[in-house]
Length: 319
Image (tube, one colour):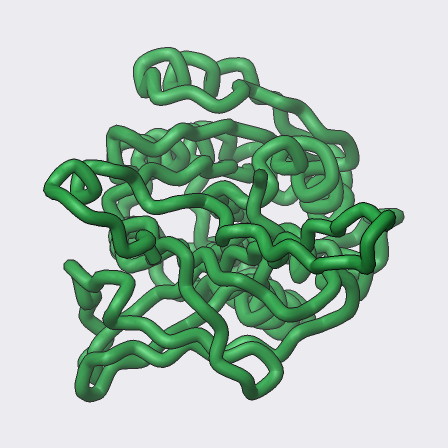
C-alpha cells in the first residue's frame, strides 16, 4: 500500500516493493539493527459463483490472512500483466505416429495465448528437449515446432522437475505457469511424484495439465470427429486412474486447473479456459510475519459477493 504523502506528486509514485524498514534501538555504544519484513507473493484467481472471471479488482478489494492473522498487502498486480508460460509437450512413443497432431495442437495454443505472454516450448519423452526459450514471437515459436522428434518412454515428472528447478528458477516470484499436453501416463521418470508436488509448492508456478488419451488422437494431421477408432486402441480412449489422480493433485498443489479431455473438440475449449484462468490471476504481494522457512496457511478474501478465490503457493518476492 502506498504511503500517505502530501501533494499531487505522490499520486504518480509507484507502490513500494518493500515495506518501510523498522529500526530496533540499542543501548548507547551498540549498533542499531534494521528489521525488514519478509515480502511474499501469491497468485489469486478470482471468479464469481458462475465461474466467470472478476476483473478490475484493486488492493483494497483483498484481505490476506497468514496462519490466521491478517497481513498488510503491499501491492496487487493486475490481471493484464503478462505471464511466463512453459508449454510442455509429450512426444513419447504413444504419440510417435501422431506427431503432426501434437504440432497442430501446440500451434493452436500459441494462437490462443495472450500476445504479451512469453512462451517457452519444451518437449519430453525419456529425455528432455528445449525447443525454444521464452519469447513473444509466435511465428518463430511455430517454426520451432518442426524440430520436435517423437519416440521413447514417458518421463513426465523428470521434465517437470527440470522446468521447476531450472527453467523457472530465475523467474521465482514472477508470474509463471506450465501447460502440459500429455496422456499423463508416466512410465520412466527417476524423480518421484511426491518430490514434484513439493517442488511445485515451492515454485509458485500455476500448472494446467491437459491430459488427452492417446487412443483419441488420429494418425492424420488434422483431427476429424468422424474418424472411426481402431478397436485395438479402445483401451487408450480414457486416461488411467493414476494419471487423472496425479494430474488433479498437480493442479491443486499449484493453484491451476486439471483438464481430462474426453473429445478432441474439447481441446480448444480447454485452451480458451486456461487463457481465461490466467487472465483472472491477480498477483498479491504482502508482508509476512514468518521467517522464510516452513509452511504457511494462506487465505485470501475477495471483497465481492459470491467470489471464489483459488491460490498458488506463496513464494518470497524478489527484492
